[in-house]
Image 1: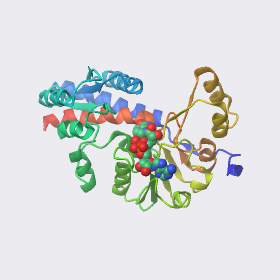
Image 2: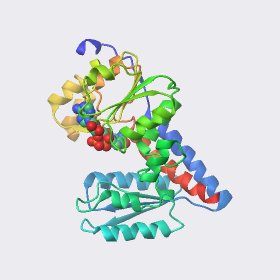
Image 3: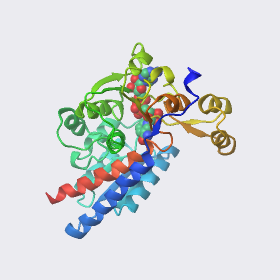
Image 4: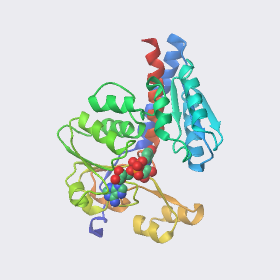
Length: 313
Ligand code: NAD
């Protein structure tokens, strides 16, 4: 497994650069919409409770949408808010013409039925792309809002000139927010698509037949050298905090920057792809951090701009 680690051959699928380009396009689009039609795109995020990771995500979304020139609002509801009150909040936002995008930060408290809340959002304002109407539109190839992470990955592939037509794409993971929409988007670009999941037999063998491999598994470093066809395009969706030195060394070798992060900041980030194996074996690789992560917010902004623009039709 480790014999391929001597050389780093993979070219970087740079998510930061790609996201910065998209955000600049969105900023220019917002300015034009304001100037030509007097419409300022508005994004409202609903956050229920005080989950620390959700608070960070919501703050980042708030900052990014303001920087793009949008009206950015966060509705912070207490953790014990009942489902009826959350639904009433969504109804109010649906009826508010200044709100073009509604995003309910997940996870919601356990007592609240997530699907009820998602289904209450007006599909025309469903900038997260999680409403069944958006999922159905994607399935049958109608225009609609795409889930931000897989949509961002498609931008990353296209903007780096990755050829997709006729190539074998393997997606590991079948979640509604990443794996399934990812597979459909690759199919739309004429890939031959295989979806793998926790019950797949011979996972390494199937992955090693991929020209394009997307790992959205939620298992740190699972994708090792034997999962990667030499020269393949590898997209790493996973994000995990590594807090102990032994695991850090197993994943990053004696990389001083990573070890320093664990020692001084308490953690470093890794994806679902083993970073040393990925770098040595793939033709293209999205890094963690700085790969898929930055694209998710960029695509949320893009969806909000599109939603606002739809008002002028
Ligand atoms: P999820 O837990 O909903 O789905 C994981 C999928 O992986 C499941 O379909 C499961 O069948 C499959 N799986 C689990 N263990 C497996 C195994 N050993 N072998 C094969 N398949 C296996 O997760 P998700 O929401 O799709 O997210 C996946 C990863 O992507 C997580 O690490 C998450 O943090 C990350 N993520 C990142 C972003 C981003 O913006 N970068 C966005 C969403 C999710």
